[in-house]
Length: 206
Image (cartoon, rainbow, N blue to C red; front, side, top):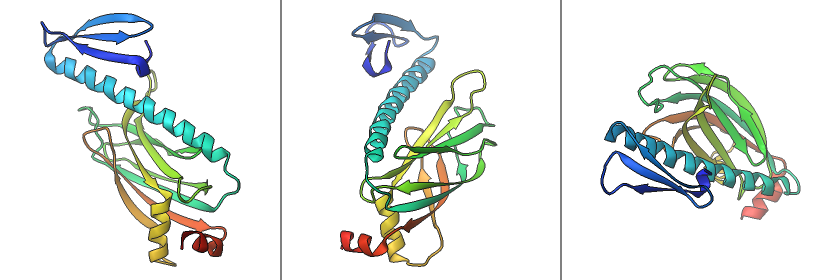
């Protein structure tokens, strides 16, 4: 079954049962040991489906970014730390961030803590001030299983540009970005944007 084609149908006779339906693969009936487990399973399916949808959108955006003509600037990003990560009650985590801008992608170091300090620096070429988006996805490292999704967030390059215009010559901007698709969590980072042709950009956005 493909997650993108999967549909969940509740069982009318039991709160602990549901059916997974896929057009090309038929149906599978599932029974959870408790209602709580059933709700957790359904939540994880919904999160996985949303993650796949976001990934496909990100890939399309990267392909569009590749076709852009010339870079407009350089984005320096320092991923500092994370707070209040939703660990599903696990406590200690070994987490990292995947950070992407268009077709460019980097990973932070792995930090072992419920409040990780990644302290990782990376840089990206900005190809479109109006369309590029910096995306950050947090995972728990899975050594003998797939990495577990701990939330995602993003910030538009145009927002960074506008804030840098209001404070010319200022230090890198500090941002606390809330993680989405999870109960809690934030990523704290510093960002600075350097344009290759400030005069041309100023005329373009005036």
